[in-house]
Image (cartoon, rainbow, N blue to C red; front, side, top):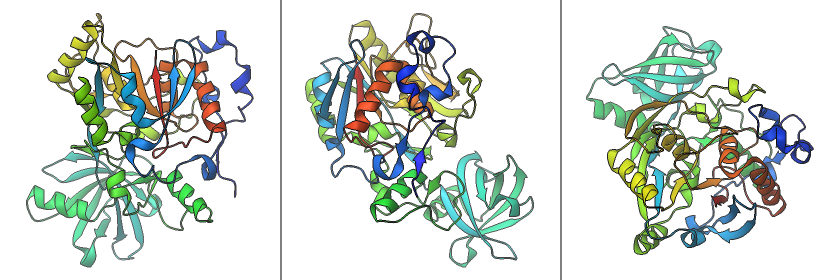
Length: 398
């Protein structure tokens, strides 16, 4: 089976769209399409050492490309520059359980906590058609955790109330002990292909994520992850090692942090050709006063601000003043960045190689320039760069 991220036969469009079309407000979904063979081009596992993956360096002003190792990133920053990271932490969001009476196997994917006191959670369920309001779901050995379905939110979405006698901390500990770190489906397919197997497992999935391996508990988190609440890790940050942070400190480069908890909306397929009609689900975001001050001080002094990943780009482009200053923020953002877009804050962006038609690819094209980034992607495929969460990195600088 040839598993492809194939998007509307548009490989030829890579070469033929005119520049005039690309820089207008009529950017179309099909302009971000290309063939990607999951078995060949997706990284099933990260590099042995975080900072030794490959890194393609794209110079925005010229379109020139360099091929480096990620640890070389230190050579592209100077004293006084600021790197902004997303310190969100992935929680074990995938639960296996059973439905009352029938004992049928079900899978629940935790999206977000709605009410701490009432133990309410927004979730996805599978098989959705068999899980109705009023049903009770059982989890763990001896059915030690019980949840009741109290509302339907979407075709597969439900609101669950967990029935638990004990403190909130005890409940959270019990809930997370039964969950697994969610890894994207395409990573599972790539792992299967590496082992000479095909396709997906014959098990329920509840969302675009699959069961992880013990290896993922550590490597699917950034080393600085501290604020729990995401269902996926900010991939660009996975490459940063303690050694790189130490070298940044010695060089006088600051590390600052924002929090943006990535939900499933971050990975939702774009299904409209006119990108202006696509809506991104809101995600919780926090920018501290300290981070805002550090970013503004660097900008005002003529230093560079490096945004590490698409989530950081979205975050620092959300609360911006008319004078291009970053403001502290604690709330929700549904900002969707696609070309053409005029940036206020980042001077450089660290990112991974993303899947076709993804909002992350659109964000990268907005910053690096559509033609530059698409050419870089063609080069990356030709040179054997690995795509996806565990894949190689791209640095976009002037």
